[in-house]
Image 1 (cartoon, one colour):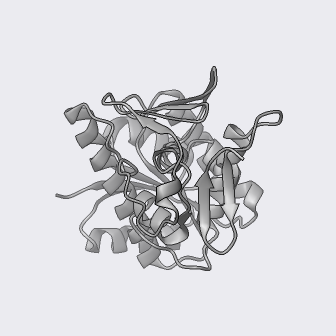
Image 2 (cartoon, rainbow, N blue to C red; image 1 turned 30 degrees about the vertical axis):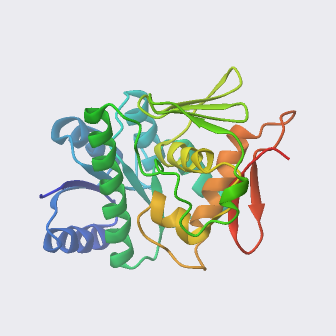
Length: 258
């Protein structure tokens, strides 16, 4: 199946090189040079995935992302950014991006992240058609996890609803609550929280999480997972609430009440 990509990048050499590489990889590519053109093309073309540079003249990539999300456009977005600070990456995730690549990058990494986003989108569409909440995290197998026998009460209803501690996650509608408070989550944040909740009490190692969420292990040097976990904590473990998401040093992460 041929997938369509909307590429928005104002740097002509980078845009030309990426357009050529993506075309050779088998994608149908629409390439534009600024945010205004990106929004117009997104509305016109309805691409399968968007590759969006952060720094563009006029409307920048963050604003494009915000507009599309405000319109309820859930097309997966991979951000290209030269900004390496965690706060800058968080700004992109907060705008609604699903993933990011830091410049300079290897084109193979871009391909890998696009494939992962498209797999997740395909899996989500299949879930919606089937009526069951069986997304990327919809399995109780721990993979490389520890302590499965000690997993505490995480109730999974036939409807696809997961309950762990005071969390309630509705897979089919992709909504989540902590207590009475609904959580505003990006696609990746939702899938990460659902994976942790379905394996509540079990320590999931980095490789397992990368495989389940991204479909690709970015290696021990990647800070991708740590950034997402940190941002998810900001939304789930707000001041005054009991922390649920815990780091197990040298291993991975676990959702549990301590």
